[in-house]
Image 1 (cartoon, helix red, strand yellow):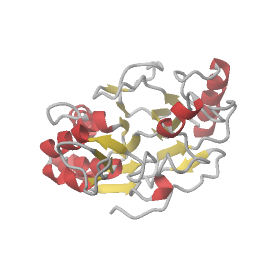
Image 2 (spheres, rainbow, N blue to C red; image 1 turned 180 degrees about the vertical axis):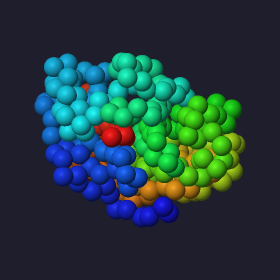
Image 3 (cartoon, rainbow, N blue to C red; image 1 turned 30 degrees about the vertical axis):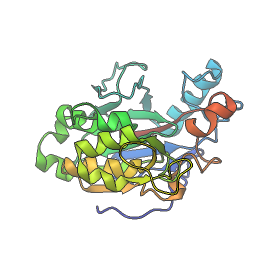
Length: 282
């Protein structure tokens, strides 16, 4: 399944859901839009985050709607931009700390919440297990070259060997786009020191008051988070990737009618909601 350019995720027949990739029989995935729920502004209206200041009753109702629309139980993690990975079991409660999860148990939806960070949904080559990853720039980079994707491949039995990883299928969901993701020079340096090829994911912004561009020593850069993820995946031997190609239709910041964005709305409105990416087995 080669990577294919896509202008934006398409609507699902189920209200509020967007299609999330193409999968083997028995594997299903979805991404929530911001519409179709119960929350009031600035969480209007399908906010799934219980940590952003929304009415608890509205969040509980929104999560119940998600379970109903998926036909599976989404397990919500407490995400901390780290590299912790969990196996989801029948008795796994919401609120466990991790930024990635996997399961081989039918009816449990591996779920990550986002509002600018990149969600990744993954499926084993044989369709027998699935995984979800929450990847901001910190989690994707990790420490000492070990990020959240590396940790997942270490702990998910379907991704431990090169041949297994070559068979994985991956979908990249909406996130802050390369036209909106401004970062400091320290972020660019950290990535390029880990992998010189990562320089291709950064575009220099002009230094304030000067005609020239930025530099590795100072200034600001625009970062292409989906491209950085594709480089990380390629380094792990994973090449069957679809979804977010960095085009504007996938940008959580600019597509305000479809997506929540922390960077766009938190300072302006005081807070914002969270969307969810889920993948599950029949």
